[in-house]
Image 1 (cartoon, rainbow, N blue to C red):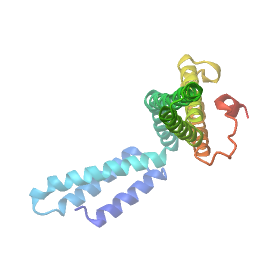
Image 2 (cartoon, rainbow, N blue to C red):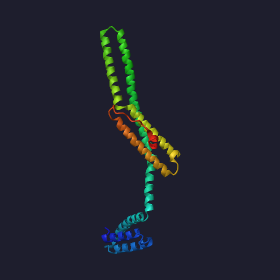
Image 3 (tube, one colour):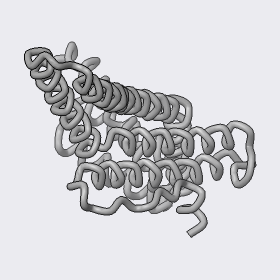
Amino acid sequence: MISNQYKYKSNALKERYIAKNIEYNEYRAELEKIINEEKNIIKPATEQDRRLEEIYEFEQQQFALAQYARNPERKTYEENQKIYNAQERYYEQEVPELIEHYKNEAKKYRAIHDRFQWIIIIGSAVITSATSLTIFINLPEIAFGIKIFTASCSLIITIASSFTSYFKYRERSMNLQHAADDIEYEYDAVKLGAHEYGPPREKALRIFVNRITDRTKEQKEQQRILEQPSETKLPQNKGINASASS
């Protein structure tokens, strides 16, 4: 382990370098002195190489911290670069996956809604036809069977209508598809450098990320509203462009 005395001297030297009381060459020269002092107190000699590796690793961290503190512009640049890289990954990887996810969810809810609608339409037609058929049938057994059949169809239609009304499959599908279209529009605009997405790239990505995060938040709020009871009034979907202009 590196001695506490060495760490104290190294920290003191680092603070002098940060305060710009000494320049880099003097900093390195004095650092070599305290490293040699630490090296000389290490016994046995076989431990010196391992201890020196610890010291140099420790000093790499120390110097990196000193450089950040001494040159805040460099720190700001590197932090901005990290943000830019994260935004680039978000645009290149996460947003296409988000668009695809919204589209798939919209298709799923639309398919469920269509199935229930077909049940309602076909069931209603069957009930109307079966009810009309009983007029021409005089056999009580057959007429009773038709009534049981139409009652069963009515029950199925009622259940299907209740499901579509309660779970709002059509509204969910429309909202998800609208969100996917809005996000895809912004994604393509960045790719083409259209509207506000012209150079520089950093500014374009910053605007894009802000808009997409706002749009996904809006979509989550709309989804939450759809999960409320049916009597709750749905807000009008304004989309990205309307929210951005406000």
